[in-house]
Length: 77
Image (cartoon, rainbow, N blue to C red; front, side):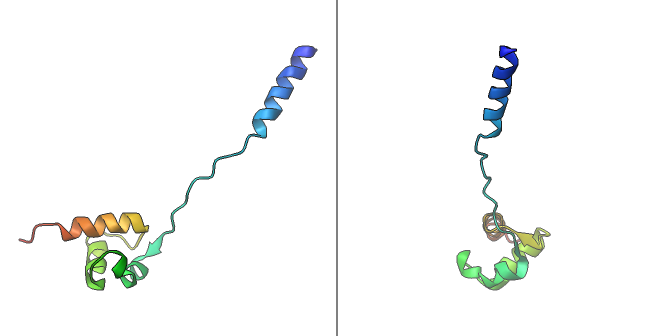
């Protein structure tokens, strides 16, 4: 009988442990990202072209920055 109380007490303390919240990044439309082109250090048209080139109509700021930098560093043929 004592064992079941101990097991139940341990289970209830595990349930009360605080949960970690995951950081959720905001997803913006291509138009919103293009309008915020100053955050990428380039023109509005470059941001729009980069997102269109990679087929993105929505992205986070971090993802968009990576795509814009990748697009702008491509070799021109």
